[in-house]
Image 1 (tube, rainbow, N blue to C red):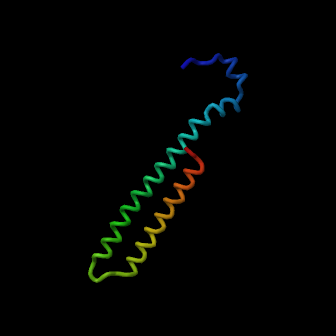
Image 2 (spheres, helix red, strand yellow):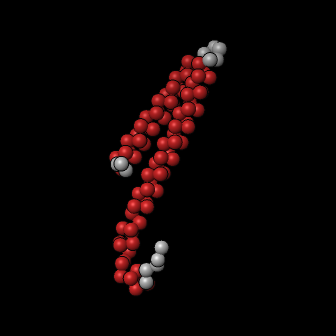
Image 3 (cartoon, helix red, strand yellow):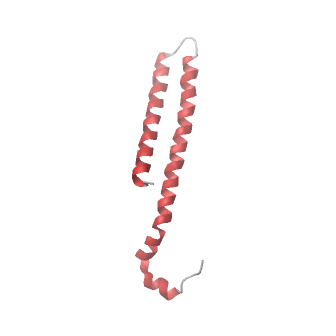
Length: 92
């Protein structure tokens, strides 16, 4: 990369510099969304194991199982919402 002369940088102005950073910032935001989705996927897997663990106890605590299933459904919904947001904001 070759640096631009200082005079040219001053002529560019802040808007022009911001425009040149837009693609990088968009990629960074998309990666953040992907990380967030991966974190939710990890939580879903953990919650699924909690549901199975709750179902295998004796006696079965149905209230606890319902809470675990509700939490799992919420996580799955959040994942779908994040994926929808990512796909709409960053179309391929």
